[in-house]
Structures are given as C-alpha cells and as structure tokens.
Amino acid sequence: MKKIIYTVLIFSGIFLNSCTEKDLEPTLTVNKDVNVISNVGDLKGLLSGAYDRMTSATYYGRNVIVFGDVRSDNAYANGTSGRFLTSGAMDMTNSNGDADDAFLQMYGVIANCNIIINANISGDQVAVNHVKGQAMALRALVHYDLVRIFGQQHVNGGDLSSLGVAYVKQFLMPTEMKPKRNTVGEVKSFIYDDLDKSLTMMTPSLNGDKKAIRTFTVNAIKARVALYFGDWDIAKTASQAVINGSGARVLTATEYPAAFKANLQANSIFELVFASDDNRGNDSLYNIFNNTAYGDVVALQDLKDQFSSTDVRGGMITVVEKSRLRNIGKFTKADINVVLFRFEEMLLINAEASFRLNAADPTALTNLNLVATNRGALPYASVSVANILLERRKELCFEGFRFDDIARNKMNMPVVDATKQTYDDLGLPGIVYGSYRYAFPIPLREMNANSNSIQNKGY
Image 1: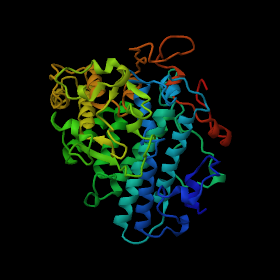
Image 2: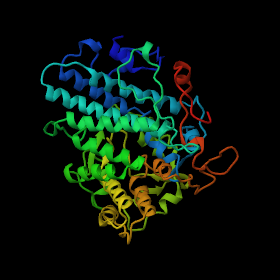
Image 3: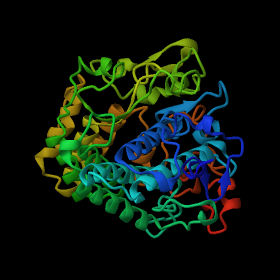
Image 4: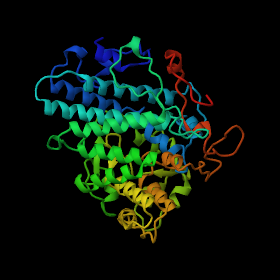
C-alpha cells in the first residue's frame, strides 16, 4: 500500500491487516505516496477524505453523537440489538469496541489532516494555505472530541493538569507511532493554537459552502471548545463573530421541524455530507433512533416533559410502538447531512458566556429567548445557569451535547428513570461526578501497541 493509504489505518502501531486499497475508497480519494502530493487539488482530495472518515458510523455518522445522549437523562439503550448498552450504562471496559472504534477513526482523520498541513506544495500559496488552514481547524476539532471523551478532566478531582490525549501534529510512520498523552491543558492550548493559526491561513473569499470548513466554522469550533473549558471571554467573542458574520440565522417555529429533513438550511454553519451510499442500512443515526430498524436509542419521559404544549420541539418526540418515546424529528433518513454546527448553538453559547461574564448583561436574556420564542415556547423572565442548560437540553437533544453539559458543570449524572438508566457505580446508585466512568477507557489495543500510553483511572 502507498504510505497515505497505509497510515490512515495505523495508530500507535495498530495495523488492520484485512484492509485493502479498494476498502478505503472513497475514504481516501487520493491514492498517492506522501512524497508525490504536488498540488492544491491533491490537498483538497485529502481533505475530502478526512470529511468522509468523519461520516463513519464510529464517529459523527452515529456513535459519537449517540454517546452524548445515551449517557445522560435524555435517552437510554433498550437492548434491541445490544448496541450502546455498556456506554449507556457507563459501564465500559478497556476492550469495549465503541471506544476502540471511535479512537481509531478519529486519529485516522488527524492523519489525513497532518499530511495536508505538512505537505510542501508549490503553486498558488493563498489557495494552498486556505486548504491547510481548513485541515488545521479540523485537526483541532477532532482533538477536542478525543479529549472530551477520553480525557481525565472530570475524574477524581481532575483539572487541566490531568491526562488528556496525545496531540499528534506530524504524519508518523508505524515505527514512530508511540506518542505520549498530553495533559488536558496542553491539548486545550494546542487546539486554540491550531484554530488561531488556521484563521491566519484561510482567506474568507475562498470560503465554499456549508459542506466545508469556512472561516466562520473556525470561530464556531473555538466557541464550542471555549464553552466546554469555561473560557468565557473566548466563547463570547468567537460565538459573536459567527452570529454577526456567518450569514446564518435562527429558524422560526414553522421552519424548525422541516429543517431536519433537508440539507443546507438557513441555520446551518457546517455539515457533513451523507450521500446515498454513506451509512446506508442499519448503521446510521436514523436507524438507531427509528423503531423500524435497530431502534436501540429511546427518549426518556423526563426529556419529553420539559417541553410545553406550544413548543414545536416537543412534537418531534412521540410515542410509537410498545409505548416507547422516539426521536422522530432529527436524523429522519439515512442519507441526510449531519449538521455539526448551527446558529442556535452559537446563540446559546453567547448567552451563557455573556451571563457568566456579567449576570446583568442583557445580551444573555435576548439570545436565550431568541431560541425559546422561535420554538413556540414562552420567553424566560430571567437568566440562570439552570435556564441556559434547560434550553440547551431542549434545543440540542439527540445531537450529542447533553453529557458534556452535565460534565462541564461538575454535576452528578441525573437519574430520572432508575429502571431504564442502568447506572451502577460499584454498587452505588447513579453515577457521581468524579467517577472514573465519566471518561472512556484508552482502548486495550492502543495500550498493547504503545508503550508510552497510560490507561485511564478505573480501567
């Protein structure tokens, strides 16, 4: 195999021997040796390959999004096909396939990005730098996903000095792939560095459509990262840049339900393309929520109870077969694009950052109510952290945010249905903040291959 094909399936010495070049089409659209990548077209092909890897069922095509809801008070796994039972119960082991698959897939995306970033390309340097800047922003996003899932910042009094993940910046060959884990603080710093540099490299006039990283997307990523880490000044500034300059807008109550059934809507900032041959069959978000296929992920009544009778979002969760509450409003077919960033998230980030910085800032209530009233819900009379988290829960349910909102606020995992939420932390009911279960294990396969890696606490 050529190096570029070979490396994407390797991380820390792991090689999938059953793979062929044919298996990797269309994941990598440029089948070339690293040393012969020669023009901006090659770079664009590699970037398309990185996006395509992100649509895998092990990443944003299903699992990483589901992890955020099934480990929370939004949803549970009913065991129809056995999927998400262990992650939903927060009862994983170091041999868990969900953790292993996500880990490998995300570092595969990073491998694509590093080839692009470190390539020596002649020609139009403005165009070259724009693609490299896109790859740098994508590298930052993927490392953020890795650290929020595998990092130790929420375990046993963890903080920025806790173990994060290896921040990989170079295209590494198999003999070199034994990186050490950076601290959470180092990962955060590297993420910001990548995002800031990407903005200096990208040219706004070269921005494409919402199916690729744009300068607005970079600020959206920065806003999300800053919210997670409580960097309120950064969160406010970055989200405001998106609100002011992206051209996106909040959808009305009338528009909202239909928006999840079509691509490139007015509120979209960045979305991953799911073509007709992507995630078909049962391995899709649609089929994990839908009762006619696997249907393993079911909404909890407590989530449904948060919506008023006039809130259009409540109608997108309804009882179908066997008295089970189903998400029928989002991911309504297998080939619909997955929107990773949308305008309403930016409004809610801006509202929270504004409030955290200055409780009297009227921007917080304005932006909070821009979301609520455009869903048919009554406006909030005041702003509080509880109200912001409630509105985020209602607006962003089934999109993978709820677990992180609970964790970043240092909350115990809410138990709203002790029968369906099958939590059991060493015999104690529920999962208390600080439990080792707030982080996934480093996969056993990685531990065996990389002598520099350190296992997470509890595993």
